[in-house]
Each structure stands twice: as C-alpha cells, then as structure tokens.
Image (cartoon, rainbow, N blue to C red; front, side, top):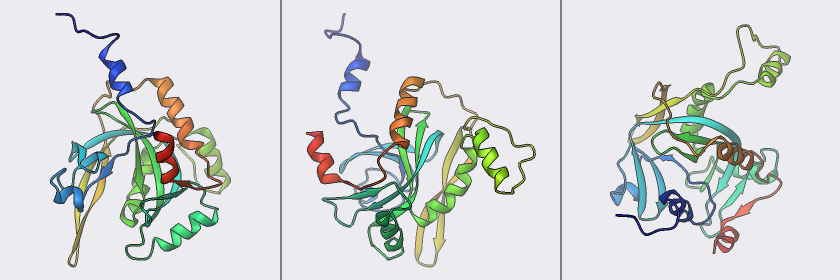
Length: 231
C-alpha cells in the first residue's frame, strides 16, 4: 500500500520540529522531572516540554562540534537572561551571583554536540560547579588545531608531540557523588569506539556550528522575546 503523502517522512519530521531552537541534553540527578517519573536519576535526556523528556539512558556517545562561554540567569522564569561574553558586566554579575544558594544563576562552557543514537545536534551546558570541573576532562576530546598549538607554544608551554586532530568521540556515563546528606550525579568520560552512522550532514553541522559560535555576545537574550518570535 502506498502511503498517502507528498514527499518522504523525513520532510514531515523536519516540519514538526516547530521553532528553530537548538534542543539540549542534560544529565538528570534530582528535581521535578524525576519526581514525575519522566526520567530516571543518573540518565541523560532531552527535555521536550514540562511533561516530556526523551530518555537517552545512562550512557551516551557524543562528538564535540563547537563550544562557547555561557552565563544564564533563570531567577525570573518569564525573562531568562543569557550572555555569551565573559568580559561583559552581565556575564560577570551572573558568575558572581552563581555562588549564592538558589540564585538561579549558572555559568560555564556550552558545547554543541552530535549525539550518536539520535544522529542529532544538541546543546550541552556545563554550568554548575561540578559540571565545570568535569568539563576540564571533556575538553580533552575537543579538536586540536594548529592555532591552538601555536597559542600554547606562545604561552611558554611544551607542545612536543602535539599534532592537529579532529574531535574524538566520547562516551558519557555518570557517577553518584555523596557528600554529607547531599547526593548528585557527575559525568564520567571514556573514549568511544562505536561508529557514528547517522548525522544531519556536514553542511548542516557546519551551519549550526557557525550559528552557535557567532551568537551575539554584546547583549542578553530574554526568553519573553524569543517566545513572541516563535509564534
């Protein structure tokens, strides 16, 4: 039986995405999503709405495509403030206030990643204290360019044996940290040997990477304005 549609199913999957916003991956450890049984603690997931999360499981494979600094203030959920410029007053304010308990402020490294099982691009924000510490290891899987090597050498550091290379695939699992009465999960990393058999295509990856690293950093973005544009 011929399916009654114009074009392929891939066209309709693309149209059903709605607004042109990059989805995100996060490591879930506690909170409403777990209380509502939307996902299991210690699993990675892609939030779709307040009531839907794509559960990617306790282990995911990714390739780091791009990275940028990011600071977020979610203290006002109607107007979330985002800054990408570490030298800006807004970024510095968020960074300073992030030290306060329940401030709603986070800062760190935002990665553009390709996830193997879905073959899709996502943002993965390492914005908490424990995630920033983990990012030091994750950065070791990022691509090395000749410019990086030259800059390292100019800083007086040893570059013997260091050669340009593409980003290395990495497997992310998690580990439960227990400190007094508090517990939370942190990522752990290992080299990935499983082939990446699907992706949006190199042109789409390059286009998204350019958008990712060229996001305006001289100002802030308020979610109330983004919502209006998405209608």
